[in-house]
Length: 477
Ligand code: GDP
Image (cartoon, rainbow, N blue to C red; front, side):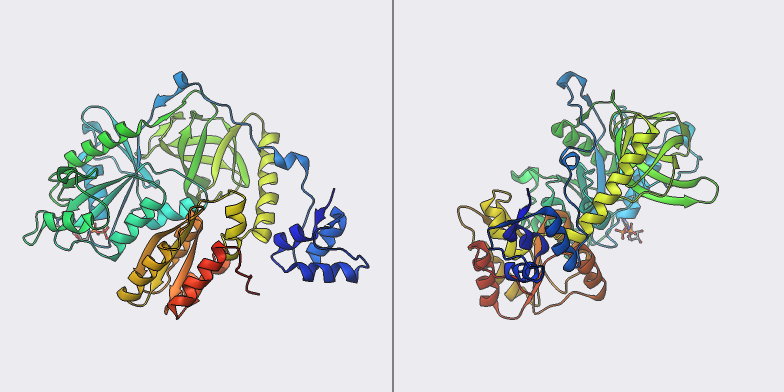
């Protein structure tokens, strides 16, 4: 059937006249709306440095058929929780205390294995799964790879320090993915602790305590003495109840890889959090671009287990090669299918890496028109509080009936890796005002192809975004 010159130009992110020129060199005279045969399009794409391949019919089909669940097959599953907050506010201590105080007598003295996540059992028998790596960075980088695993975020704020920059960052990361927040006001044992101040400051960021008529749960705790920790766990349980988290345990397992390790004795191993179905020893699976068969599984207490149900983290042995964190593991019925799927995904990824782009400002209009997006997500980093506030306000004022401009995160300072990850994971663009990316962020921008725009004059920012929303922004070459 072929592809029009315009479509081809769009795909390659080059102006249409460049494509026409290239065609002319091959002796083909085509107008912008004219279709060229697929073989020619591939040659053109390659002349622009792309690896192109005709889309086969089968690619349109989903790689693995999803079997829909009947409501009666869905069973409650434990919540998966991440602990976030500013550095030194007590995230690690809180996780340690939770793990220590909730170990059954017979397990005490046993060595907790670090597998990347752990489960605690409450007095009433309910279970909560915690990701062991605190901070929003881990959560957002998994998210950037498409893995949606966290159900609830616990925001730790030290009562003697109050809301700090990473507190705000954590809030915005959680909000961008609609993950409900439970606030742990920590260090209340300290003489200078002011839990009310934390409530006031968080209210300014939209987290209004229930006792003030809002809908955010606040619990005062001391990670050090353990005071309030049981209540915190109980509240997490309550929030989980409201979310009605469910999964079907009686189907082929599917899970997310959260950590990987190359063990000298065990070979490539990875921690999987099961999302649905039950993972069993002997299961054949595909995991990202690798595959394998479950040789053995260990739980977070280092015990060998035969099966893992939804929301359970297990260390899995039996990968052909190391998968990547964020990859999905899916059980399939034959080794051949596992290999085929792994290979297919590999080809697909390589191609995507060549062709894929993050959300770009100049593509916004097309996406709005196509009904693909309803909001333009923006991260703003500025040199001063004054310019930040001015920018946020003027940008949000550009919202129209068709598309809202939403500032998902704004802060004073340089553009960091976290900003880039958040942009990638949430499909946002980044606007830097009199500020630049740090070296690590620069590398990541290049790799993830996030649209970052640097400005020094406010009206230029406004002009560009306004034009983009109206389809008038021309791509920068
Ligand atoms: P993280 O950077 O958020 O993981 O913070 P840490 O858990 O490493 O804690 C930073 C410091 O605060 C450590 O010295 C902890 O001992 C201390 N700390 C954490 N929680 C509490 C608490 O509830 N009370 C007191 N007094 N100190 C705490």
